[in-house]
Length: 247
Image (cartoon, rainbow, N blue to C red; front, side, top):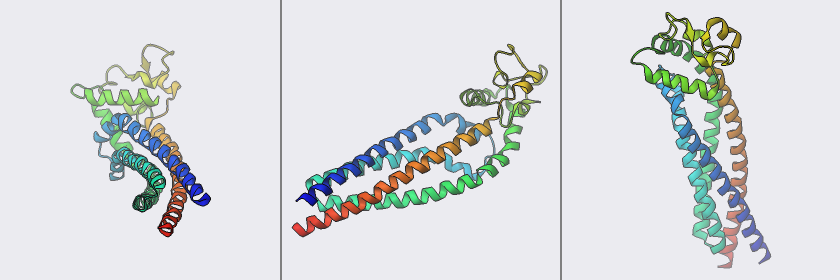
């Protein structure tokens, strides 16, 4: 009796942790979905490498995993309280599948990080060409708005730096650069020498750093969730066998 109560308590602890982790993953997925519009719009305007197509599905993947973790956390607690072998076996099967998916996802994340530098380098010429042909031009307001939104959000200038705008419709004739390429305290207009002194980092650097930072956070969270899932699977099977023996 004492052992059974201990196992139930452990199931509550592990499944409570899984439930909270699911809520966190779901929240990150929703945030990425809401906040990724500008980045996806910019990628659509250039001939992006095929590797970046997977970024569009990351938010949906996180939302799906988060929702499933919420469900299995609830299912594990109910199975322990009601001592239902069916619920416990269902819980074990779902957690095992999620665990295997997380392992596969971790491998894909490692591979993507390995090729991230190559992807950003390959994008440079295409993005710069798009800026120089379209930024600030008539009929290209959507791309101009997307770039301005991205530069304001990430506090960056161009893809690599301010020189990406040299020769663009915005730059021709006036030799001015976007306000984001200069410190606003320098002057009301951003000229070449001021943009050079400000030396604002390119958006590719900011995006790459953001991906690197989030990749480390996601990897750490995934490891923690995986450890909890393994422990929960072990406890659920022990409790499953004890219920079977009592029957």
